[in-house]
Image 1 (cartoon, rainbow, N blue to C red):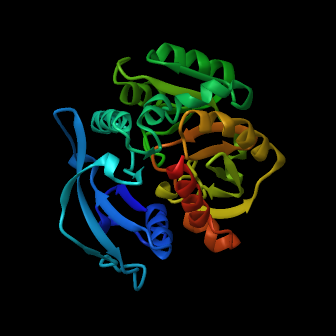
Image 2 (image 1 turned 90 degrees about the horizontal axis):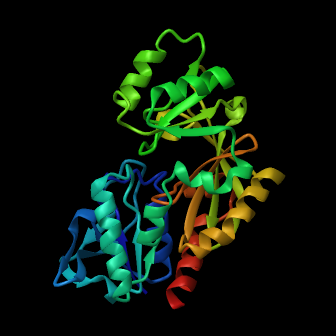
Length: 318
């Protein structure tokens, strides 16, 4: 297959943990031809969506700090429908530029391109708001632009988490208790004087045991989760915020949540999703650029990249 990866610059990859790198490595091992482009290099000319696609040879990183793990060819402006699969792996945040990229991808799909995850799915599934579709699995939650609503929610639940809808890597997440002297300042900063929508959720104390990332690939649930365990004194388990990743078997509740969501994810054109679960509660549905492949593979010897490329090969044939 000819596979186009829409991703951040290749030289920026942290190859020892990057999920997209592991996808590329597995695809190259199977003999697929790899191409790369930036989301900013998507364009439409007379409605035809194309990309400045650069073929590259996967050489492999010699060590954790090797950024010369690829050899680039000559860029060619190519219609997205010319590829057997287009894999969108640009990292969040989901800002206006990301939105425009998904709109171009949807247009490309109408022209015959096979895009994973689909542009429509990435727009519809805001990674925070998506959980509201599965209310049976979530902790008490409110979404609002009014600080007074958050204060009322705090009075009701006493200990809460507040986060922006467009954040990533744990950025902008605050834990608030009724005795916090900085409630007003935090809400003013986060909500920009009642002009920015946020989500507030009752604090889930099981976070000390990890914020679990559960992967769903092609409608199948990976049997291991990556528990991102917060540093001492920290509320956030995100690896980007210093959390420690520990692969572990799914609990019965983890599996129940993932298997319930899986058919809906498939229906919406989501080949890969990363569900975030704290304790028994679903907290996010990540569809833009889910991670965790390398950590699970290394710790549990369960080949997540191979499963993903299996699913991609199958989906590209449909």
